Image 1 (cartoon, helix red, strand yellow):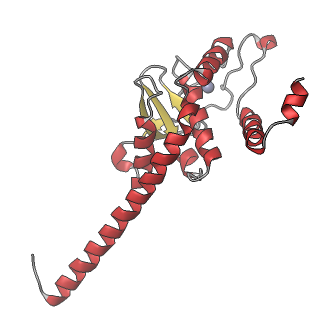
Image 2 (cartoon, rainbow, N blue to C red):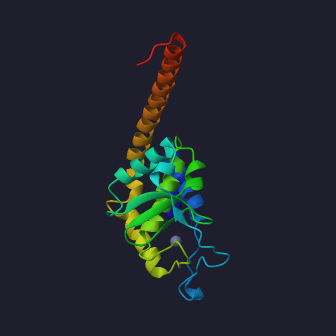
Image 3 (cartoon, protein in one colour):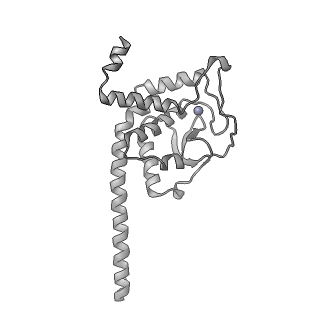
Length: 197
Ligand SMILES: [Zn+2]
C-alpha cells in the first residue's frame, strides 16, 4: 500500500520527498542507544557572534527583514551572524541567528535553498537551550522539531511568502542601486559644469 502510494507520487511530490531526504543528512541521527543524546561537542569552538545590521550589505539586510516578517518565530528576533561551524544558533529564548556564509552561499531564487534556510531555522526553534556552544539533540528536541514542522504555523508553511518577499526585495535593491548610480552621474556632470546646489 505504502509503496503503491510512493510510486504514484507526482513529479513535484517526488522532488520534495528527495529534497527532504537530502536535508535529513544535515542532521545528526538521534539514537536511543547513545544515552538519549549525541552532542555537537567535538572540535566545537564557540565562535558565534551576531553582526550589527550596519555591517550587513543591503541584500543581507533585506533577507533578515524578510525572514523576520514571517509570523512563525514566536517573538524571537532574527539576526545574521558569523559562526565557525553552525549554520544557525539560538539562545533558546529571544533570538535566532543565521550564519552569513550559509546565507550567502544560497541561491535565493531557488525554492529548495529557501526551504533549507527555513528548515535550519525550524531546527533552532526546536531548541529551548543556548546552542551557540555545545548542545544535544535528544528525544525532547526531536519531539519539538516534529511539532514545529507539522504545526499550523510551521516555518515551512511560509516558503511561498518568503519567496515573494525576497523577489520584491531584489527588485527594490536593483532600483535603489540604479537611483544611486543616476545620482552619482548627475552630481559628476554638475561638478564638471560648475553647478553647485
Ligand atoms: Zn541543534
